Image: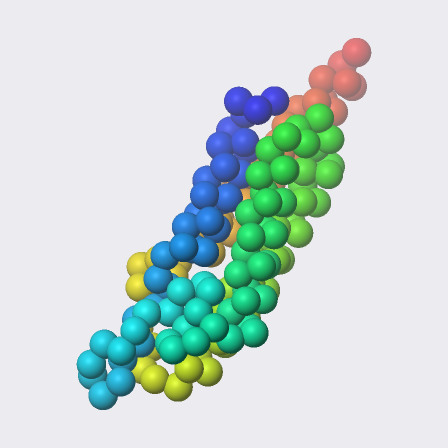
Length: 144
């Protein structure tokens, strides 16, 4: 059902991924002077292929997470989609981190750099809540 706690967790995970796509994830400094910000779709002066890939994967993961809210009748599929979303988020964050690292200037992460991690935590909480519901349904089936 849409009003379950796992739906709230999944919605918060999707919102944090969308926010990570839009907000600056790091500040770039050259010789101690702020030279720019690193967004999900661009680091420093230009847009690299790696940042485009991470932007696409973050968007895909956010879409999967939003779709996962409405697959509430198939709890096994929901658990698989949560795991897949966690893996994609880790992959996208690693690719984005590498793209920011390759810029070459001093990088200081902002508070928004923790948004992919927050999304992973919310997906894990949703998966645990879905697993709990699955156990509850199975125990109720045993009683019948």
